[in-house]
Structures are given as C-alpha cells and as structure tokens.
Length: 118
Image 1 (cartoon, one colour):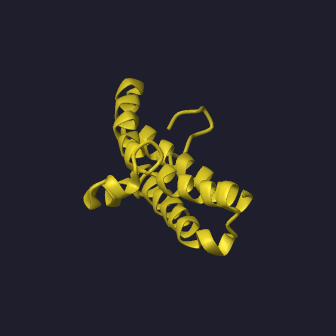
Image 2 (image 1 turned 60 degrees about the vertical axis):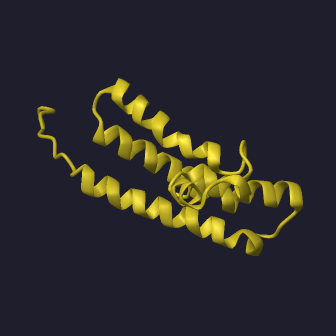
C-alpha cells in the first residue's frame, strides 16, 4: 500500500505546488484547484468509468486521484498485488516527475541576499 501511496503523495504535492506558483493569488489558486479536481468525478469513484466518454477518461488521467483510486481499491478491496496495479503506480510516478519538472520550469530558484532580499 505504501508503494502506491508514495507516488500519489508526490504527485498531489507537485500539482499543488505548480498551481501555487502559477497563480499567486490564493483565491485564483483555489478556483483553479477546484477546476482541476473536476475530472475526479469521472475517475470511476462517483461515476461509473464505463459510462464516462473516452475523452473525459483521458483528461482525468492528469489528476493524481484517478490512478490512485483505482490502485487503492484494487489493493485494499480486491487484494491485488503491486504487479496488478503497476500501470496505475507508473502513471502516478510519471505524473509526479512531470509535475516536478513543470515546477522547476515555472518557478526558477530565487537567490536571496544576506539581507533577505531577492
């Protein structure tokens, strides 16, 4: 279960940091986060995955909860092994890496002087 949770936590943290860096206003960041969470409805948790149109299922893959929910349900409820949820874990890992790269591109490092100024 930990091997599923780790890439999920990294991907969610990366997504939050990228949104926070792109949108400096807390209100705008919250609105964008709410819009990003919308594909959660189509992840198969609250709406049947088979009834969801293919384009929406593809878009839902960029939200970490989509892959994580499927992996957690399979491991926790069905008793699946890590090899059975490999695609979801790899998807979360790739998403975490992509968000880390996006964070580095979107937010160059600020070097602070000894007086605290940037």
